[in-house]
Length: 183
Ligand code: FEO
Image (cartoon, rainbow, N blue to C red; front, side, top):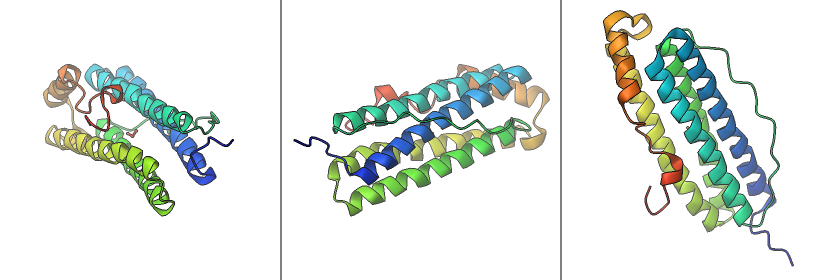
């Protein structure tokens, strides 16, 4: 008896999305290491927390695929991109990456719609909301960096912003604390 409730195409797309989330985690980890080396401990703290959140996204997909009776193939994670030039560049690149991820998630939503796989469509709504929150979160950080001087941010303004990042709780709640009912 076949108990797999996911199509081949959706299984593959979700598996690829898992790797994308793992890649996102590695990117934030890598940027966090860069930030720490620059002395931006507050930004590093934020980026490390976000690396953890991206890994939780990967696990959320993994658990869903297994619950639906499909199989997972754990794939190689691509190398993170080179280090950013400065703190504004860091968050601009993080934002671009989030937009790419949003596009990838929308594709899966579309596929699930076309297959009338309402369980997967419903599952993916959590990610649609999460991406909106994450994009907003980074836009807000970029706004603050701009106020602090953008590409030329330095001195007191950058020091204060970095200190605030360190003491501000992660704006996007940790993924494991969220559910579809309590997003
Ligand atoms: Fe899991 Fe930032 O997307």
